[in-house]
Image (cartoon, rainbow, N blue to C red; front, side, top):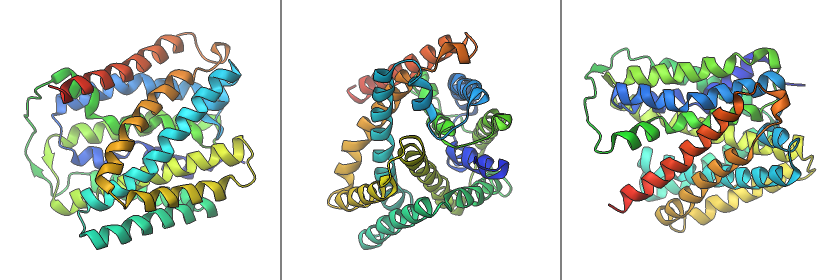
Length: 317
């Protein structure tokens, strides 16, 4: 049985993380162009879930094309998001909340344990609905200071490609069990977060809202954790998939505390690279999707490869 419409809406909104995007205070034009650049992915997801919306996500689509391609997609996707869950909890504790060392250690272990409990119990979707409502409410710029961002990026093209990075997590949307009639949720959530990101470029959020953006970042962790669990248990039908996943996440969280900075640096690049590899490999059967999907999919895959290449070049300049 699939998720209800409200739980599905909460999950998809959490995937595109409106609050961190709203407080990012990027140049509105750059944000608009960034959302436009990533919009083919939202169109892609919408077309896919209109045909089938199950917890198997891109894996369930690509295995109809090629078992080998499906395995590449599956392994790269699992690598990407298991690493993301681990290093994002560190990022929230040490960088966003900026807690003292002892407090950050307790926070990392607590956030990992809470996420594990929510995913294992199935209450994660209720939690995501609640956090999505909070994110939207906090993203409305009431009481924010009007101060349009007019920062001219030194590398405009790369800025456009990277400004709305969190919007790429719309690719998590197919990894829920939903009703195809609710496919409208995909463009709705994507448009909502894009609009809030653009509006946020005209306002500076109060310090407490900037601090609370951690709610949005943690929501993505929960959504990714739930998606990975869904693939392992519902799609692959691994009987001990939940237990194994929880143990792995907790071990990675403990290991990360040995040197959180080094752990973050060593995991973020493989995670992002594996994400784009999984998107490249996650090609559905063309007979189930309109033919224009091919161009959309190839274009977005090239977008990801180009962005990584440009980022590398800039880092070395």
